[in-house]
Length: 287
Image (cartoon, rainbow, N blue to C red; front, side, top):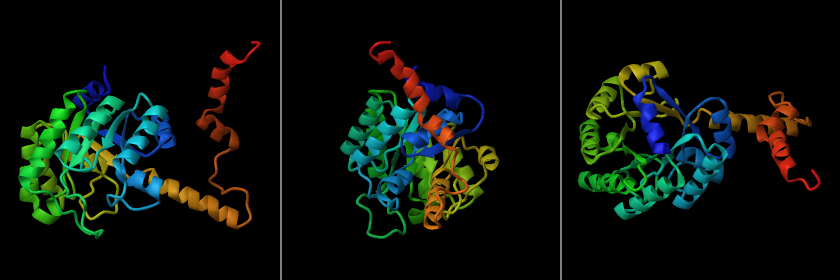
């Protein structure tokens, strides 16, 4: 089965699907080792790891696609939902983005309706007019036919255009053939219920990391509200940053490592040194 077919089958099973947010080979490998079948290649995590910066449309298609290849190479069996952002341009750019990820082995791709380039502010996400947003999703669904990659259609218009327009967009995306639906920044449970109902039985996606100005249910609450998939963009990133800061603080204090450091043997095993040696024996001259 192809990655998109495997993801369709997984979404048809009972239960809530947790997608850890990953950004490179190591985060993907650790997620797979923890037993997760899926992962979300998060634009915010890639921006943080590659730029040391915010998720404000500074990351390019090339950088995101390179990060996907790292993730897919380190965890080839993981079903990756790639963050395609706004498609990096107009409807034709959307098609190029969707086709590239489909050929490369992504199971699904997110396409959203915000305007690019964005206004020079971190506040708000002005979104495309209704019909332009329709055409981007129409272009994405058409391009997805080449590989079967699933299209996750996201609307960011709730804060700027209101919940009624956001629900209309979800209904429109369903009619255009989107496979998964995503309302960003719902204000409360009632808005979540409206968005899930508008998805007409297709899976709804949620961001469940705390801290942003949106309704953030627990995993159990999310499932009860009708969400099928949830991701946690800061779930690994924030502890990773905390670990790096702890390591640096230990060095500043004159220590060799922090108290949270892994034993050297465990770190080497995670990074695959024993596996490398086992595989390399086949190619040693004289064996």
